[in-house]
Every structure is written in structure tokens, then in C-alpha cells.
Image 1 (tube, rainbow, N blue to C red):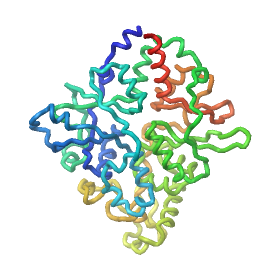
Image 2 (image 1 turned 30 degrees about the vertical axis):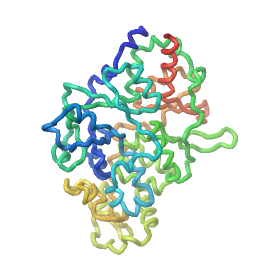
Image 3 (image 1 turned 90 degrees about the horizontal axis):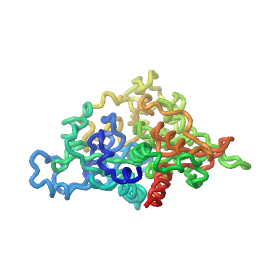
Image 4 (image 1 turned 90 degrees about the vertical axis):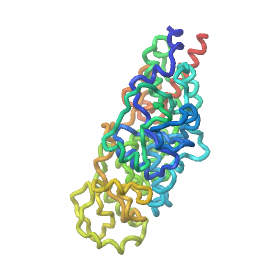
Length: 432
């Protein structure tokens, strides 16, 4: 059985995978935002560097050379954009932020999270790459029916945004940690007796986790959120007990932020960690938190933009039936009314298009949050939970980690897919 597992190739994990949508390295942050908002099935986009013209795919002069000249530099998602836009310099000048190159979203001094892999590579080689730090393995696919998205066709490609168009006649997909764990679950008997052992006995409970106190500013966790996105984990929201330590209240999860829109950057910049957690959870923020963000953004921006306040009196805030009052200075331009031309490089996307100040440019979309039925409570297990139970629990909820708590909800640590894969890898090595 172990020999059968080792004989599998990376291509076996590509079955049913859609072609990878991608952005050229010359794209802007606004281009990435547009592509993600108009691609309902895509939460991440690859960023590619190609020496040839990225739009010239109809008549490739040398397919081998084109493939050689093309490489995926990394990936971007809505979490990267939200964190980028929540910085002070972006808050005061979002138009410039959205015109910045998409590479600005990459974390400095952090290795790329993607790696090109030959489809004939063994499953064990793929496991090696993931344990070395690759989150996504870029694999070429052939004879694949391309996945197309509503409203994403030629009008997006012609604007220089995102495309699933092939590189030199080739299309690519990517394999992630979840794909490998899910595949290995079908061979769980190979790893006996590990699946029935507890995570504590296996020594895979990470005690050093990212956490922020409930009443601290969410902005104080900005770097932790970026790191959590980079490591495919989350930031614990806790209350400190002087006797028992941190008690897990909730989490700020990049897997949730991926389904939010860019206006969440305003909440990240102004709310406490506990309020921010409530803002992005369960289908949309309460009206009270929307009002709180509005007031604090106006305070943060000071008097700037207030002189234009009366130009659009009485227009409703998008996502709300409430008309603007004399104290409101949010944009009256609805996201739904945005035209395709407003997504160009010269005119940044969406509700940020007509202003260089958030206080005159933000619309609150209360229905764009956690659209996949995000759970209210963070996913937890106990130190005595079995490895297979934690593995199945994480796969069922489509997350790469499970928090570990004791019987009193005190935070003990975290178990990740990377920990589980490391256990499996060591077991397979011991069989050689």
C-alpha cells in the first residue's frame, strides 16, 4: 500500500482542477481588486512575469521559449489588498494605493509562496516542496476545459486585468496543502497507528500562536494578519486571564477576509479586534458598527473632504436605507453603479474611483461578507483529540488549521495541515 502511494504523481492531484486565473506583473492593485471582485469562484490570483507580451497568445512563435520566459512570482488575495489599503498612507490616498503595482502586495523579505512543479513529479516530491514552505504548487495541465466566469471574459482581458488564457499554449492549475491532505486521507491506513494517536502524543500542538487581545485595536494585529495569510493560519482573539492564561474568544481569519470587500480596510483601521471580528463575521456588519466605522474614519481624516459634503445631500449609503445626514461624509456612489471603465489604471476601481480621500469615497456593502456560510465560532479541538479526527474536522470546514483548547476554552495552541503533513512524511521515510 505504501508503494502504491509513493507511485502517485502530482498530476493525479490535478484532476478536476480549473485553469489558474492570473495577473501580469505589470498589473496594479486596482486591477487585482477588480479581478477578485468579478471572479466569484476565485479567491487567489497568480502574478506572472512573462518576457513576451502577456496578451499575445494567438500566435506563439516558440512555445518552449514562452514557457521558459514565464514564471509565477507569487499570489495575491483580498486579504493582501485589505491589509494594504488599511495602512495610513493608503487611507489618506487610496487612489495612489490602487495604482501601485500588484507586487506591492508581496510581503518584503518573505519567500514566494508558489513553486513550479513538473506534472510527472512524485507525490513525495510535492510533499517535500510544501514542507519547505510552498503554499501552492504550479502545475501545467493539458486538454483542460477552461473555467470561465460571468462578466470576466474579453472586457477584463482587454483592460489588462486577469485571464485564464494559456502561456504559450499551456494552462496551469495549482495544488495546495488541502489538496494533498485530502488525497492522503484516502490512504490513511498506510500511516497506522498514527491516525488514532492524539495530537498531544504526536507533539504537533504549536504553542506559539498569533494572538491579539479582544479590546486592542485591530490595526495592532495588521502584521499578524498578513503573517497568518502567508502561513494559512489565523490570529486568535483572546481575553487574558491572570491565572489561566489566554481564553479563546474568536479569531481573525484570512479565510473569512477573502470573501470581504475592500471597504473592510476601514474597519481594520478603526475598530477593536473584538469589534472587527464581529464586523466581518456572519454575512455582514451590524449597522451600529458601520456607523462606528463611519464616525471614526471621519475623525481620523479630520476636516478634509467635509467641504464637499453638501454636494450630494440625501443620497442613501449603499447597502442601507438610511439617507446621508449632515454629519455623514461617505461617498454616495453605489458600488453597483460602477462602470467597467472605472476599473482602468487611470481611474481606480469601485467606490474609490472619484476621490483621494476615504471619507469621500467609501461605500459599505453589507452583503459581501463571508458568503460561504462562515461559522460563528472558531474551529477547536482538544489535546486528546486523535490525529484523524482533527484532519477530518479541518477538511470538512475548508481551513488549514484547528485551534487547540482545554475544557475551559483556554487557548493551548494550534494544529496545522503543515504539522500533519510533516507527521505523514516522517512516517513514509521510516518505511524506506
